[in-house]
Image (cartoon, rainbow, N blue to C red):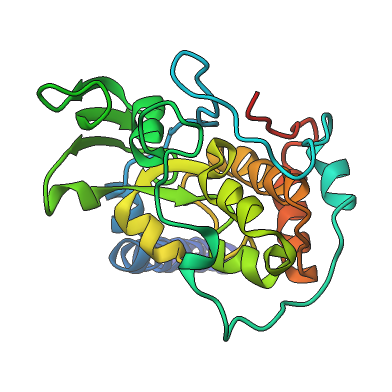
Length: 265
């Protein structure tokens, strides 16, 4: 049987095209397998975070306002950020927690210390210890930093699972203007509900004294409120930001240009 030259060339072209397709499919399959065994399996296994976008600030039913040094400027958080001074960090070799007063005072004189006030404000289904209308024994909430549901149970070990975070960490505040405040003003900063959020214990420990340039909540939906709250606290207590901190705050606010400052009233 005689095969024409043109038919032979067509057969060879089809064969090359088929082999090219096989190779392409093989490379794609290999890339998919490599992706799965590096990042893909974790992306598939990790649930999407759909946590809260903001957190409570003030409950007039049982809280009394703490008077800050300055009123929080109302309006755009971005404009308030532009109004903050930009400086470097002051030394922290003389920082002590006691400079902000005894931890968890009853600064607003409502009969309950600040920690229990914030737990009562932020948790739902609150249960008090027997015979008390102040000490929170249990509750649950949609934790803002991780975006996950968290239960609180009072106990020598279990209480650590939910901690009260200073939105502007006291160590950060000390290096950015708080040294110039009076002892009473520093006590207000440490106990102001504007600067306090019930948070996941490990997340709070990871944050430590970090600012927005070094730590942001894993729950991205909460970052705009978080940054706006930091800006509001710094404006209220005459604190400054570093340039890297301001740049990080701007990047967050670029995703929410309508974000307003946060007030405790």
